[in-house]
Amino acid sequence: MSAFLTDLDARLVDDTAASGRGVWRILAPFKYKSDLLGHVITVEPGFLTDYASVPRVPVAYLLFGDTTHAAAVIHDWLYHHHEVCDEATANLVLLEAAKVERIPHWRRLGIYLGVKFGGKSSWEEDGRGNGHQLVDGVIV
Image (tube, rainbow, N blue to C red; front, side):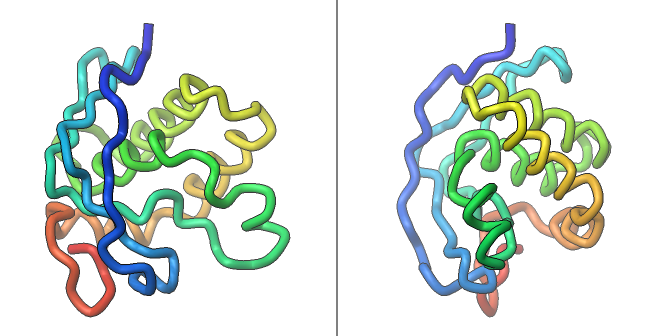
């Protein structure tokens, strides 16, 4: 059964980075067992995340923003580690992890559709880095 095996431990690095979404640094190994992938993902200390990249449009952010930090960290990590899976699978793991996080179905579906239809550029950009540096407000 899919499960978070450790608690998420993160500290704010820069609250204006990532187009105003803020960036957090993972402080301790963060582990998630994915049935979809068939193994445990370990997000290493030092990894940077902007959590869910929900646009700061009032209604969209009200419905979907600031709601699924743990699943978003796993998704961000997968977007930086293309050797683990492809983009479509990473998006499905986000959906799987959001369910484990007990995010309501309608909300996790909206978040999933957002990354499915709007995440391609992030997949391509994030894949060029390892998620450990912040350069000009962007995680690389």
